[in-house]
Image 1 (cartoon, rainbow, N blue to C red):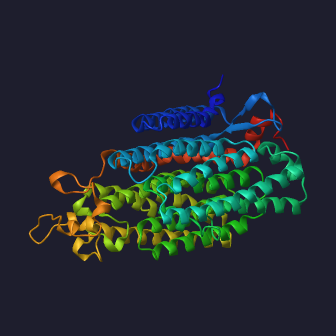
Image 2 (spheres, rainbow, N blue to C red):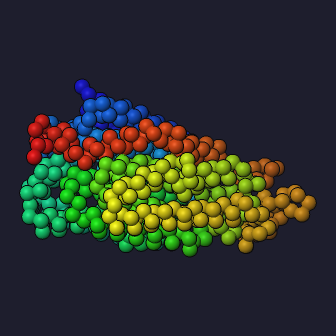
Image 3 (cartoon, rainbow, N blue to C red):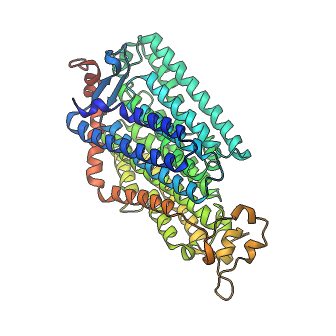
Length: 542
């Protein structure tokens, strides 16, 4: 039996882990071990899946033995297996980060007993979406991860989190409703929701019906991917969540929407009917997102706007409908999942070390915490696209694909991509200069936590500012012994360091990784291997 037949375990294992973690609700240490062990085993399985499908091509698993279009099918190909591996690696790092934070804070600040099973359910939903071989199972994957994300976003029950959660819920419900309507209309028009079957039958519909179904799917997935002008909800929702939750949201949730766009555009609508519209949307997403980031003074909101901006690069590659453009998009998606998550994890450490994430209230962290400065600098330069990092290589691939396309819109995207990249560098450099490089004395209204560890006139550190501050309660328990230095738990630092090193590894092995991305792109654009894996030999022939 081929190892790909075990693909459903990528969904089943996190669900089983969540059930066990829930049973251990009054034993936090056991919960942590179960959660970390579950994701580690799942990651090992997915690495095995990736190695298997890279030599055999796409493989379909028919659940319950029912052949499509009547049964549920899961499909493992190069693209989905690659995303499974990188998403589980990121989730493992974030879970280790959250575990370190929870242990250091004695589980204060939220119902952590709920966090672990909910986080594993989120992982199961993401895996189900990547493996889904039909539209309804893709919808189920979205709903699983969104239901879990509602809980994670509102952990702690603060007013700001509840307000952000309400916005997030309303927007998510609207996008899910549009997706469900699209599924119903597609089934009514074709009699199937299996992706491989739809790849054949949608081409038999009249252009008007195709166009309507295409638009409905694009709008539903566009909201989930946070493309402009459907991205208004993201910068107000993500920054309010706890640091580990914000990190995993930024890294994965929008990428599931991007995955859905890539899969449907290449498999169901290969004609590129709306490529010009997508190019315009990509350009606006890049520019509007990064301009929003330039206007921010809070690091978490700033990173949320850069997240929106860089979704535009991914849509750019999809809209080109070329092997090079799609390969660069796949490479960039993998890069961005890792780098964006690591930056939000670093921001959580900055907030813990300095007491705030506002750049106007921070300063001198390069001197106070050199390791934190290094952990920020590497992914920040990577996100900005500075050579030789993977961010530069991914953007270079996209720009080359745009030049090769040669259309006026493609050239406009090339210029827009360069401008957005330069503004990203400006934003990252601004954070570096204010948070790390300038002295603490130059910070406007510095946080008491920062003042407590800043050198006084004699060069010594003083707790006076902290002890006389109204913020004493908020910072209680965050200092270690006589050193009077805010605690950065080792597990939080090590997990962040691991993810930063993973981003560096993508630079070191960029050549092989881009070759894998090209193979995945070529397979998706060809379509026949995917269709035949699901429907049988000869089904993909014209």
